[in-house]
Length: 193
Image (cartoon, rainbow, N blue to C red; front, side, top):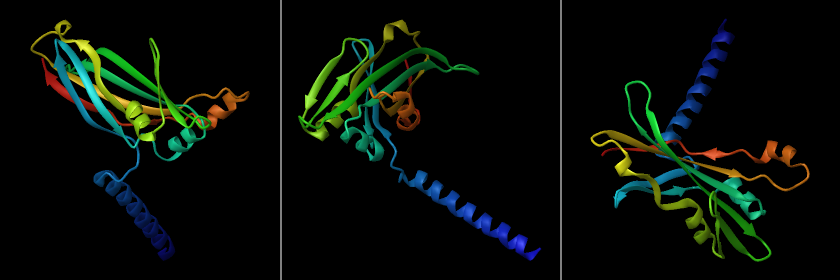
């Protein structure tokens, strides 16, 4: 009986220790995952624009994958909605995609601005590449004149980072191990228009 109590007490202490460690990391912001900072909106000539910075987007396994030649894709999903009684009504969803690659022979980074008419920028500095991939400036969200006036709206954003599929013969087998995406939580701004 005493052995069972000691074992249960020991497990409880270990559980409480791990729980408090996890809770302290989240409270103090010590986690190393990607985080969206400086998420702002503005109205320019009747168009809602959003800007943000993604911090810790190139760390750990993502940085290692990039340095080994694997393309890393940054996807940012903006969701504009109008709060309702039970379920929010989604008005528009905008996705912005940036792909980042490192060419070891040329020693340069390439940033591909995807979906739609594609544009590519080559830079030699990792900080410049990070700026192109992890910083969005004035993304066109919606024409404000198309929204009903006098309502509260919510603009949410979430970022995900993943390694793109390779062109290797066994790409489906590799995708089981390599295509794990890392996501931020949703960040939101409420505003009245």
